[in-house]
Image (cartoon, rainbow, N blue to C red; front, side, top):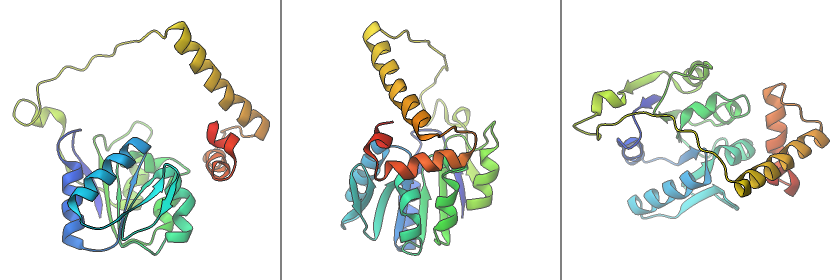
Length: 210
């Protein structure tokens, strides 16, 4: 149990897969986006000669090794709480969010691994993660690896001005979100409001669009 903190591109996925190989137990991998869902599924299919389950992106299929978005894991956690003995949380700082904490609480898996490039967070989310998974067990920052394992880098913040078409599209989608939560009476004054939106998205197309 614990959290692995390494910069992007330094092998967190490889280490997690090695842990899966060593443990050899039913495993759930939880990720924040559909893009990462696809990426993890490809990696796992390459490494393991077994079908890979998937919760998210329009699929709900459980296997001994399954990947899931945080949203889908939140919706499925009660049903599959005792089905996995090892759970990997990629981008584990998401677990500090009020709605997602229940994912870790409802899963009975005794073996837990969190992956992140930035463990300590200004919002204190890392304290919640430590309670749910265990503290950071190993960590390196980009400066430790720059030049030998990572290319030298500079960090710069670049503001991007939207084109009129992009601004119109952004405003339209933002309007869809604002209109839905207003009509639904969701105020986002607490974490339970986000949970409510996630719950509704499971069977309400308008909530999914929002």
